[in-house]
Image (cartoon, rainbow, N blue to C red; front, side, top):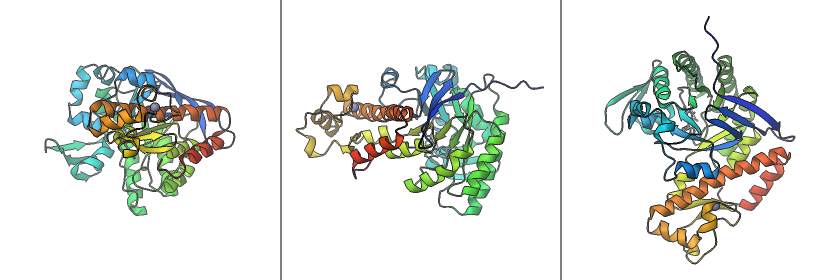
Length: 379
Ligand SMILES: Nc1nc2c(CCc3ccccc3)c3nc[nH]c3cc2c(=O)[nH]1
Ligand SMILES: [Zn+2]
């Protein structure tokens, strides 16, 4: 009789907001216990671009993301395994989550072909033919050694036909089962099932039913933040998160901006990731309490105030808009470090404020205040 391994990932629900679906809790991992709702910085190539681990720690990051697809192609998962796994390789001793690579194949690779067995594609760097399957993805993720790993799934185009999405959901469920069986790591990393189904309620119900029956330690809501409107995403979340067990963590992939984070939390999501904070930082776009600020604009050339007068981060306490604008203008890497640090701090602390609003049953008031301050700026 196979002994039932104790999953390494647990979720503890602490409190629900009285007026919305928002909830606060704790994510328990082998590398620490972290408060939810949480924002997880993305470190695709085993680094959160230009930010050192002690800076991530100082800003309150708990779980960061790495990309199986990228690390498999370069430097290869065996090198990371020889280093003792991702935590040692990148000198980060808190939580790490890896995606399974399927999404990246579809968003980055050319000549990809999807079959029941798995996905074949051409490595854009070396040009060689590659093959990724649920079994192969588990082997790579196990070698990388994260605390949380994603099942191998297909994230289908959002606006496909019902029939296409139905077939895709059924295959993703079969792939999830194969991944569960192939997952042989002795200390049972936290494997999450990924719910698909695009915008179809019946298919989201089918996907959730299949995955919940496999009893994963956590669940991702996939297939969103792929070009659909924010209203559409909220509509799908409205009927999807209630299908997931209340005592398991829920992770909305690829989200996002302040308004989407708040709206996701209000619909029962606990974990978020997005490349946006560091990606837009590279061209000098900053997330502030009054919406987005493009630091290159001439209006900031003589502005010696902080990026955000409501932010208490290291950047806002020590550097001016004029200085940061100058650095970005002359393409100094220090400028990108400063805008990246502030943007990550901004989202991590937005979640801290949200947790407080949940504790006080004031999530609706918090949402009002944030949206009012932003006005009609892009969030
Ligand atoms: N496996 C998977 N990943 C997705 C990502 C990448 C998140 C990610 C994880 C780890 C590192 C980087 C990115 C999505 N990003 C936006 N929408 C997304 C949907 C999916 C999805 O449906 N499935
Ligand atoms: Zn700041």
